[in-house]
Image 1 (cartoon, rainbow, N blue to C red):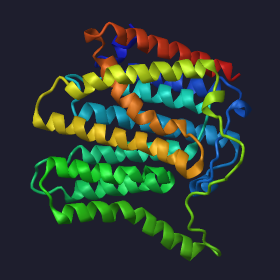
Image 2: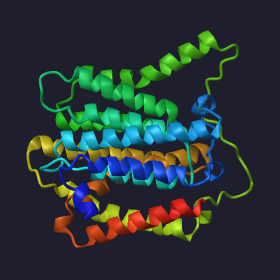
Image 3: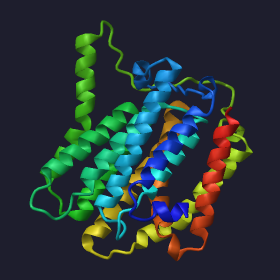
Image 4: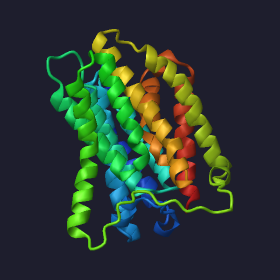
Length: 321
């Protein structure tokens, strides 16, 4: 019943997703949620009070979930509007958040969703300069906050070349707009800081081997395993799609390109900082698996995995108490 409500056009069901999200953050004690810091410059402007961090994280997660759902429905990945993208995004972000909370990543995910909204509009229309500029600029903002997101630039350029013939002006605009947030940051640092520090990533080298993933606990490994298996099943159905128009194919291709770029960014972040940022991959996981869960009628396994993920997610939230 729950999955059927979110996989149909019933707008009021989204209210329950928001309520569940807030409960997942407020049920654990404030002091028990680990605030992750890995040495990004964006971390220095984040609030230090626990309540402010949690409130800001809730706001960013809700905004990201609603934008992801809007992106999914506006580009007609399904025949009717659904709300599984918002539910999955909020569930994955909150479950990973009670284990490893990192505000810059939550903010970066919002910019990724906003940038993809403009990238999916790039097709064979006469002019795409506005779409290219906005997608490049928003992806650049995501990369400024989380530098490993520089992988979004090649994905954007490849997406343009797949949909259109090579035009130097469009490719140049994509590169310039992507770099524009970095120029703004350099200028503001020079003007307002007495001793500006232009280093975006600081890596701490230790002789002790970093065993974060191995130390997450068996329940978190179960949750991750179910997410990965769901992603494998969902990816096959997502690539095939129920719509065969050229625009629908273009939207799926661009979404897959950005998803691949984010997964590469996940591993690149480890090379840059030595840490794994789990919330980095929340958007592609939730977006692709949401497609599978929205088409649960065509799969016997989809409802089973959805409810299993929900149960484990709730247990993980309570275990932090």
